[in-house]
Every structure is written in structure tokens, then in C-alpha cells.
Image (cartoon, rainbow over all chains, first blue to last red; front, top):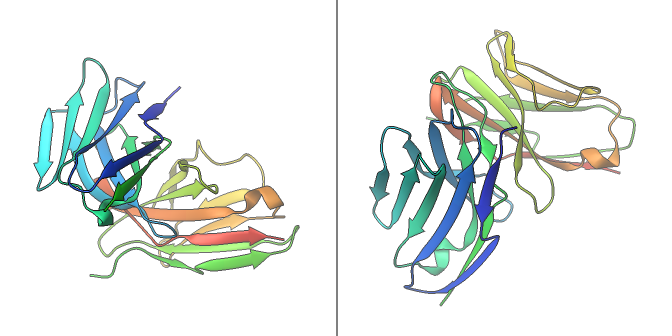
Length: 113
Length: 112
């Protein structure tokens, strides 16, 4: 069935370092890959997304890369700041007219000042 | 432009009671999704609706759970005869057709 695996489950970095979170999806028909940030007790917030027709997308300190052949995608955060501390979820979906998101298990990122 | 709205934000029910969760999508969005998040776990898809239609309910438990998105008014997720295992955060998301999906603040259901 459809599955998204996310690693690591926890990640601790020093302020200013980079953080990388990796996800692998099982359904080769998946064509849309968003990343969400969720702070404790809050809603998931979309931080960046990528579609299957591009290999990389960047927005300031955040970038996402996609390898369709290997069916994996990664989130890269550079120059981390304490306010980046949160749980990050990757997800995958298919279909051009909307469709359910299959989420990874989440990565708890801690940025130490 | 108001974001996705959900109410109530917190709901306490005793075992056997009914829970009704409401979701108003962002203005202009006609697609609504419900997800459940158990404590310290990820988000699990439940159901995907468009106005007056259930598009995908593959994540809905077979019994006690139902959802609707009427022509007028919010989408409703209804849980009948709640049990302790239903305690979770229930998030609604909306989109304007294809992605992206934007999430509401969630309803935290506690079953006593």
C-alpha cells in the first residue's frame, strides 16, 4: 500500500548548522510532495512543496530535493535558528485534482542556541 | 482572507456520547480533508470531500464515523458512541482543487 518513511525521528543541531530530513515513498504515481512544520499544540504549516516535474526547489533557508528514480525527497534547512525547532512532516500525494496526503512519521528538530 | 476554521477547539465527551466536529474551508476552496493525529504520532488521512460528495473515505473507520460537506455550511465529522481510543486531534485541511492543502487549528477530542 501507500507508505512514506521519514528519517531521522529526532534531530539535534547547533544554531547555525544545517539540518537534513529524508523521506522515501512507495507509490510511484505520487507527484506532489509537501513539507509541514508543526509546533507543539499548533496546526501543521506548509513550509515548502515540490512537484514531480522539478528536481529541486529553494525558498530562502529551506530547500527540497526530489529523486523520482529512487523515490525519495529531502528537506534541507541551512543556518538553523532556535525558532526552527518543531516537528517536521513530509507527505506525498497523487492526482492533479486534489488527493489525500500520506504523511511520514515526523522528525522532531531541536536547534540548540 | 480567513484561514481554515475549526470548532470547537476542544471537546470533551463521555464514552458512548456523540462528537460533532466542524470545519469551514478557506474562502474559494471547495476541497476538504480530515486527518487524525494521535498523541505524539503523525497525521493519518480519514476522508476527502467536495461539496455534497465524498471523494475518498479510505481512511475512515467502518463504523461510528461519518462525514459530510453540504452545499451550504461547514463540513462535519461525526463520531457516534465515542470510545477512549477516539481521543486525538482532528485536523481539517482545504484546497482549491489541486494542492496545496492548508490546515485548520484542529479540534482536540478527549473521551472520558
